[in-house]
Length: 228
Ligand code: CA
Image (tube, rainbow, N blue to C red; front, side, top):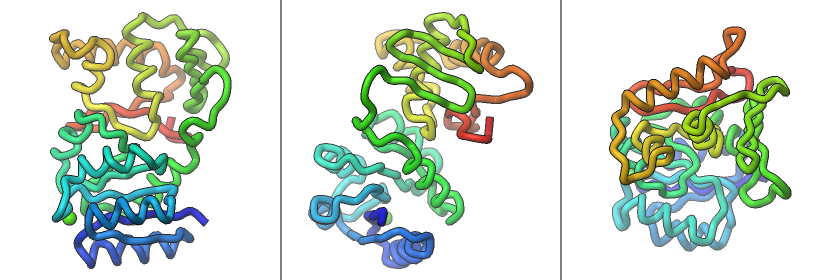
């Protein structure tokens, strides 16, 4: 049974998540403080951790880093406001996904299922290849195939796609993409990201497909499965 550790200090919110997840067939445990969370994470070795960003005894972002040091669980951050997501994304905490509270039960379950469908970190052998629908990205070979046909992308277009397909369910903010593709020391305006994004989409979105989703006010993410 897949175990989800719920780290949440508000009792009603913790109960809600518990009944939702148990109803969906998951095993759960709950921690209301950072200290209890670290202890439980070591003891139960959860596959998924739901982490509320606002905890009384510790900063959620610090806790995320501490968990990452010993746990390879998928970490889903729960943030209170949309604008916190952008802040959190910039911190490179090692969380796998972000959900804004209040969340819809269906959305949270869908996100968790999407994470569990992914290859577990570190278990894939040989040259890495990422498949997103009909798109195949081969990072080492710097190659992208669409329907088996090699695409001719610029270095920047490739880097954008490489960054987005690294964690398919995750939204990358424009600033995170900018830093990843151009480097932190370069100043490149957001419009430059948009221009390259538009060119990239022209190349990979054929026949009405849309591989990259714009998340308004946040950034971009890869479309998942039958979304494309
Ligand atoms: Ca809280």
